[in-house]
Image 1 (spheres, rainbow, N blue to C red):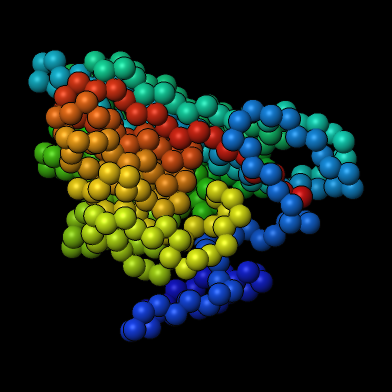
Image 2: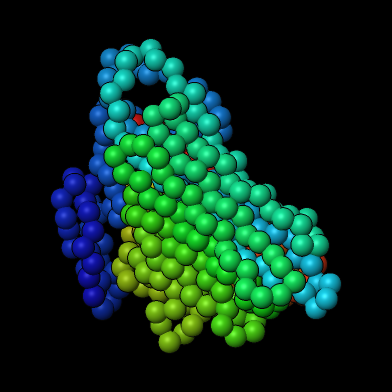
Length: 350
């Protein structure tokens, strides 16, 4: 089996997998690489700040990711309420002409908050902006109702720049035991994948993955495929080699040891296995968090950009947080708080 990936020199290459293990060209990098820009300098912003254009710099490349929405708290009154997943933040990138010494105000979208126990609402993710040049709005929160189908939160959008991609929609809640998972953020790979909802009672959907790779009723999407591709319904989307994580063991987040300079630079890994997992298990960058049936701990967050998975279980623990820009997953069972979405992000290159 082989997969075409991009090398550090910008050319296409073939990643081969031998029968005695994997053969990886050390010059390979993950998908989504936009190339080295300008002098190869960059800064990553996780909080509000100002950026002054350095001396002799006349062009910059900027990437913005909006924050993911949060989910509602869970109420068990009247047999349990129905809860949906939250939407992922939007994405945009672009190249801009600038003047050395100019100062830009940077706003990082705050993650949507999870509601308190008892059907209290969560909040939408905040908008991320680089001055007035480019911005990305946050995902909408999940919702709740005593009965019926509850739509998931809508994803945010990108505004300005050369490329924009919307965040994925949160999964609908369809019954008290069938909450929705979180949608992924947009990215350079395209729209974020949607969250999902269970088909049968106690299904545990994972979160959406990047590049439009949606979650399934029992598995998370990754940057390389949707959940639910294998006969093992809990296996999430594959990694860059086409390999799936088919056990609850912790997965390898960067299976080809690619150089990754900052979040959203490249993507290589798979989604984690849903259903039952060890505490601390997580999905790789670009993949949604796994859904889980547990009375012992909360669902794990999505990887960078990934949506949070759902939690099925009679405990006070919550659904999965969104990764950077990802929407949160909802939960069912005992009264419990909602989960927060993932924060926004800005990367500046020159």
